[in-house]
Image (cartoon, rainbow, N blue to C red; front, side, top):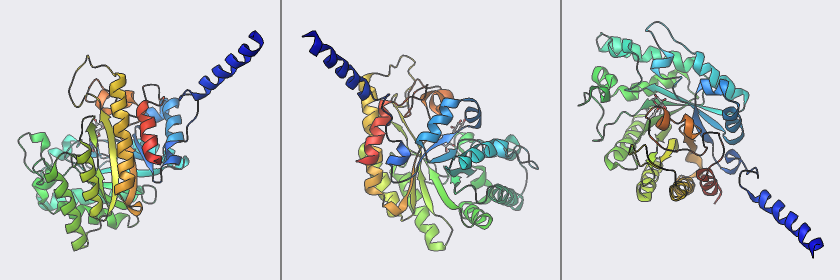
Amino acid sequence: MQRFLRPLAVLTTALLLACRPQDTAPVPLKDLAPFPVGASISPTLLKNNAAYRNVLSTEFSSISVENAQKWGTIHPEQTRFNFTDAETIVDWARANGKRVHGHTLLWHSYNPAWLTNFQGDSTAWENLMKTHIHTVVTHFKGRVASWDVVNEAFSDAGTLRNVEAKPEDGSVWRQHLGPDYIARAFRYAHEADPAALLFFNEFGQESNPAKLKATVDLAADFKRRGVPIHGLGLQFHLGVSQSENGLSEALRQTAAAGLLVHISELDILVSDWKKDPTLQYTDALQNRQSAKYKFIAQTYRLLVPKAQQHGITTWNVGDSDSWITQGLKYTDWPLLFDANYERKKAYFGFAEGLKN
Ligand code: XIL
């Protein structure tokens, strides 16, 4: 009896081991997806963390520049640009065959004090904007494939951010340059690199119909006027309870604008944007999050025509380097990889959605 049972036990154990998800190397996301799969990245982790680098090179085909190309980093004084951090990222990406999505030329946030406090008439502000865009886009010409030219220009009402109730929500660009600054920013970027794909990037389209309409209208208006715009970015910073209908509508209407569509900053907060230090990452929450990642991958493939698929990018790589847990200090696990860059249930859900 023993003679038969022992080999059977060995075989069963071997089979069980072989089937553990962590041990079988699944087909990487970048090879499963019919479009680029990206993550936003930091130069510090890239230099110092081998597991981070490894997961990036194995799983992703595109990278977005998290903070290194924002004004606060790249243009710290009026007469000085600092390309060091961005170069670290762009060099690594190119050496490893990754597409680079640039982020971002104009935003109301992350601006250095010298810019916010700049005194000058509209001509001086226009020159500031133009010089910045020309300098940065020219610097990366041929190395950065696409740019978020303007980020988050709309308020919740679906009108352009201007002077807002909270001063930090206001936009110096709209205040000093009038409503058509966005179109001019796109023209300046196009002058500097005619081959770069230019995006307008926004958040909240999935839960705010006014904002969704505002972005789609902007695209239509720019197309009509011949303003060089090539794509729309939907950030998709989502709570796990986000309605599927809202996601589908946002993708459907954005795709109908006829431009490239980028899910540009995906993460899914199991906390649903509530700060609760006692929150536990239960199996139930992991499963709900995984199902939502799957839904997004599937729905993107279904509703965005192939020729318009710029790709899906997550904002950061693992739960411990997420802006949600690090910067905003939520107790949460929003990404595809855990703190040790191991694949999570969310990863396997997303992978399922990419292929089925
Ligand atoms: C965030 C970064 O991840 C943080 O490190 C930084 O402190 C603030 O900005 N929408 C965007 C991104 O377009 O640029 C933001 O990135 C996240 C929200």
